[in-house]
Length: 346
Image (tube, rainbow, N blue to C red; front, side, top):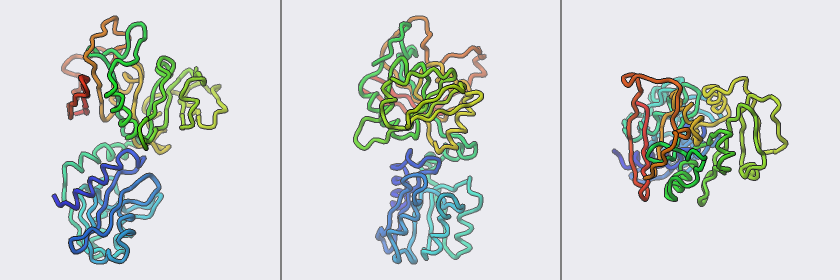
């Protein structure tokens, strides 16, 4: 792989989780063996990576090569198409790692017709970066990560409801980073009442996600700690009577709070990456209906026992083993005697 294409992919990876429903993209402009422009798409509505890199290179971009993690866009959104900027800049060549299969027209075809040499150089690392983005864009729903912290026997709490500090401090720090990488974190009313969580990142320059609460009944205690902060909170409810005067809280009334309906509404509101960090009921809804891209399990070396009422995955259906969908383990990490297990749907 070209070192310059590698740099572009690294730039895209650095901004993953902060571009909303847009893809994270990195771009590097090179001329005579020197980098003359760098760019990354920093947030939804801002200049795209190619535009930033070419603005840095200015007139020196003429006859240069640009390396991009993703095929340049061809449509008008909150910004003009990147192919226009590339053509106007006088670039001689475009090298990109992943073809954007969601574009309304072929970016590379438009560029070649303008006399620019184009090379698609497939890179598996970059393809993995955009796999979930393409799926989410086609379905108009966010990329979803379900996170669970539990004991070895899958309990999120004891039968008496004790749930604090099942996992260790290293897991807490890792979860802060996970929140930073998502636009919003979704939980249920029961979890906020039991744990009084804040769902913030709590590290330097961390990006706090929008807090999304699912409460079909609309029974919300506005005295909880999270409501005393200024970060946005969205509440999904079926209770038309639920209102609040809190300026940072938005109440969203739905006829039925189904997972798919909520996901589509979140996407329309600009949420591209959603973290589900909830109790067994909400977690089970997302897992049972396969409304997730990634499942992250944090296991503590503990056996809680009990009746299993706080088991993280519960269903009323009993499936035959031959019909149970399988997950693929993509990574395992030891966090000071706790295990982080990352899985994806096959």
